[in-house]
Length: 257
Ligand code: SF4
Ligand code: SF4
Ligand code: SF4
Image: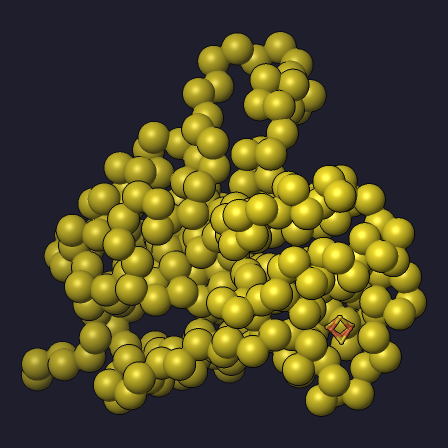
């Protein structure tokens, strides 16, 4: 009998496997395997499939030359590429290295090792065309499932584009900015149901900057509250620093005021 299901691959480059593991939540995975044909998922099954894919999900940041090679190969073999998780979409925590002294950082972690040829970590869109983004660290299993349902029914997948604050207010939380925390909710894309502030933890921006974020106003507010430019910058650089820094061209100027 002919199998008409979409052919899917789930791969990782340099990452922690947290995004890949999100697929394996029982309730999520059971539904996904019924909806699509998972041809390759090296984390859980032997990697023998050599054919093409309809959709490939990729976790992780580009840190090494081998990651770029892998991405290019997968791009050739798949009709659509989905960036899975904050590392893949925006660079994630490894991209902090872009803002640090590379040599000093390497010596701190590997005091005697001299053969490490790591690149400046970058998100996958810097190397290949990406068709869809499912950010968050780790991504939400509900969003992955919703995405899979959309692709099998050919329904348009609409990413959430309002700031985290909107969900946070709906959830009735007291604002952490008023409790002396730097919460990036006003400038960060929601869609996580404000999971961090709802648990009394400030938002670190892992779903990336909102397209219409008013960075200047937000930074002025934090400066008025007495935070230094360095503290604000390091918060913004935690998960999606490359995007936040690109978003506000004059960000360094505003932060230095
Ligand atoms: S986005 Fe988070 S969970 Fe996914 S690979 Fe990066 S650090 Fe791990
Ligand atoms: S706690 Fe954070 S996300 Fe919630 S309303 Fe305040 S700034 Fe926005
Ligand atoms: S609240 Fe912020 S840091 Fe937490 S999951 Fe949502 S976007 Fe990410």
